[in-house]
Amino acid sequence: MPFVYVSMPFEGDRRAALEAALPGGEFCYCPAPEVDDAALTKADVIIGNVPPAKLALAQKLRFLQLNSAGSNEYAAPGVLPEGVALCNASGAYGLAISEHILAGVLTLMKKLHLYARNQQRHVWRSEGQVRSISGSTFLIVGAGDIGGALATRAKALGACTIGIRRTARQKPAFLDEVYAMDALDDLLPRADVAVLSLPKMPETTHLMDAARLRRMKPDGILVNVGRGDCVVTDDLVTALRSGGIGGAVLDVTDPEPLPEHHPLWDCENLVLTPHISGFYHLPATLYNIQSIAIRNLSAWGKGETLENTVDRATGYRKLSESEESPACQTDRGGV
Image (cartoon, rainbow, N blue to C red; front, side, top):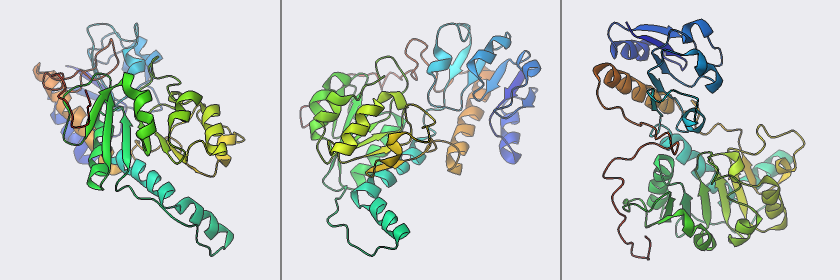
């Protein structure tokens, strides 16, 4: 019988649903960060993220279902044998992270961070004019599940939405324009809000440096919810302190955790959270991840096609034929 090692939370009805997806399977539950080395050696299937270095123990492994959307560490050469199916949890995080982004952006636009400071100091004072999402331009770098969920919500609030993808594919309804990554420098000056929702890749490391920060509007807001090293932290501190940009919303930093005395903490025009926007703080996120795992475990047991299969060469989810179709032209000249 297949042995299923489960390292993410499953309780009650959700555990029953997981076990029903693979009748006759043997299940071992060992929530992270604990790792049961002996159980890993027996695993045919792993549900959840275990440390990549530990996967060398799983010599019987045939299917790994991640609880994260990012999968680069697991797709790296030598981590998994070629025959092991690898799937991520893309599609589970859009609701939580898109709302987190909007909350951070609105905090800066409405100066709520300043009013929170005034409240702590018992100061009753107007902080002047504020801004609106309506009529603003959101540049979303990485317009996948999370970027798409954000674009849908921003567009509903009256924003113009521009998406950047690895390749310019057919324009979805939630984007007004879509481009490939080589258009980034030309698009940054148009953005009121520039959002980075990117995995850790060589080409995304230090993507936003001093030169690109200078291309942003003086009141532009930079958001990073992908990987901390996508932004050169020292350059961002300089831009925030000098007024080079209007503010930033960071759920990830480089380094991470952010050291206690790092200058980023003291940037006034910053909304900073400790990499929590996509965790299980919103119950719907865990439910969505569990649902992907349940469907995929059932499909694996039946020899059917899995969803969210990762392309080992890129670390991204493999696209369907419809997603890979050529991009259509936009009204504003997108490709």
